[in-house]
Length: 635
Image 1 (tube, helix red, strand yellow):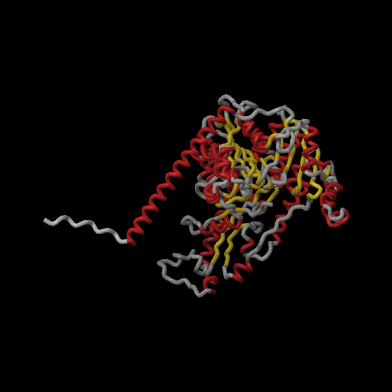
Image 2 (cartoon, rainbow, N blue to C red):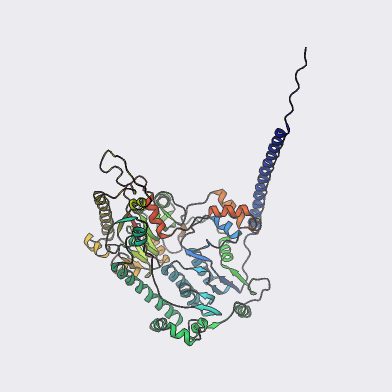
């Protein structure tokens, strides 16, 4: 019997690839194990940090503390990113997407007014990006009340913008860096117009369907310059807002508004007379009280306050974030008082579920429904800051407002910087509408757009052809010429949308459709002008709207609490956000390329206004025609 044959030994080439495969397998397992144990380590560290925070609580506030309000980023009604993204961005030092919530800024200022530990407030506003006049006027009013309470307010800037100056003007003293700048220049609104580029250069024919000669949102696609109607309407509300700005600054600084306007008209002569020194010119015009460097200001406040060598500024101070954490850290018993719920509707109105900072027909309606179903909620304030968007999504939200009222819960709308077009659609059925005099609202109108790329494709030799079972099948294909009969269909849909809009406004506001049409047709108004025309009930702040809602629910002062209804983050996201916000988490993430890559993918891209129209035209969700109620009317 012959012995079994020995297995053949693989050749050198085969042994090389087998060895290479073993090395790759080992490396793969090693990396996975390292990632696993690394993640486990981070979880343990985060747990220990959380336990430590729970034991130690928030550091106590000392007497004679200076509250340093130095906000960075856009002033918003609602964060547009989730807590994890914000925490990661801060840990990595990324300030490009920084945001400051209006409610947080107001809360800190109002708390400092009665806080015995806060001796003064220092405003450093260079990093603040104003979003509109209405919200800035609300902050300015809060600072004015703080100053009136006897707390000293000092403002300092190196390059103070016009919007930031409205807040700085409320201070007892304003200091500007000797090499800094401060210049009031007025309001302007310019846009790019694309008709020649689209039609003449690229061969894209844009068909615009609208109702209202003042509905200018999509004019840039069909014109080379603003229409006379658009210029007339814009200048009308902008002059109203600008005169109010001059009056506000004049009152705060004890300056004549007419003199301020004259100084702006004589700006070239004034700057030349000051030798081109903008800071010196600002001092001569009494816009600031002195010229100091940051070091000189710190020395001044150190002399007035309590010196602290370990503090960032050399004097005892607390930052805005630190002060908010202190306010949040105060341990309160479970509050079972009735609630006035606040639902924030900020951003463009789109269909379906949308993240924070955007208004979704489904997601925002769900928050209103949550308020309706919650027995603790007695009244609702809908805070609107929106240029509008899709008609159907706006109608979904408006219906929920009606359902809240039908359930016996009052609804009061508080308009922020902008509540126009679809933003007005979701507001009009409230029991009461509040707006700041400088709010931008109205724009009651509808439009639809249909781009056609037939000539564009023809330039590169591409043509569309085929068959259909009816004359209208495939008629909405953007690569085929638009049939005039299809244009009739689209215009009929837009006409119906406008009739719906004006009809609902008439019913909600107790007016005739004819009267509404006179103030509609896409025209934009300031809050004060809107009140004169019956589109707004009261001129007032967010606080006024809350008090009104509580009164309608028969809730007496101090017997209720205000709660914000936001889309909650997942527990895991909250956990990671807490870890990234800790000192240990920030240190671990600061030099992590992986974390930077994750952050770049997590932070949403900011969308330009034209992107909204592009998306609306592209994504019709099966509907061949989509009506839009949108306003390009921000400053």
